[in-house]
Image (cartoon, rainbow, N blue to C red; front, top):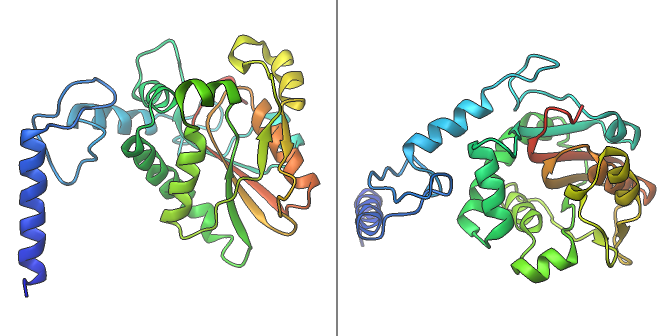
Length: 255
């Protein structure tokens, strides 16, 4: 049979050849990646990977720590009973950041490679928190997307990212929450309206089993914390031991 070394060389050569013939598309700049390296994810070109790393290395305006180390949490989320919010970077929708481009890509396209990249990034950022919970009964879930958006786009990106993160960490993943019908889009609302809308937008799945579990709650963005706090409150009221929130990006005003 073929040796492991020869297999790896052959596999790498085939990946390089495939990438040369069918260059992967960068999900940030939308340019074809003419330079391919197995060390880089297929979703980002080298320049946009540098941008992504630079954005993650920016400091939180409150605590001064880099975003992946920051644990600042919005007051409403803290009041819901959630004690930890992990995020990768900041979010500024009106700026052309790598984070904004990746989030928009995930919202608009059922892009499994983009989901996988962000799931891996979130899993890595969660490592310090997960190491303190080795003796806890863990479960991964997500903030469900509006039903109208799922019908329009054909997917729920938070669900996909949660499932891939759970697979990476060999953790159970379950659908614990669901949207009520005819809920309003959060982005159309102010902070106070978001709070009221989120409070009436979610409910537990009838067969959800969370008693005694530590739940890792995944979403794409934390803007005011309203959706996360509403979902965290429901999970804790249903008997969850603890809720840890993890998002791709947090707005600077989500404090």
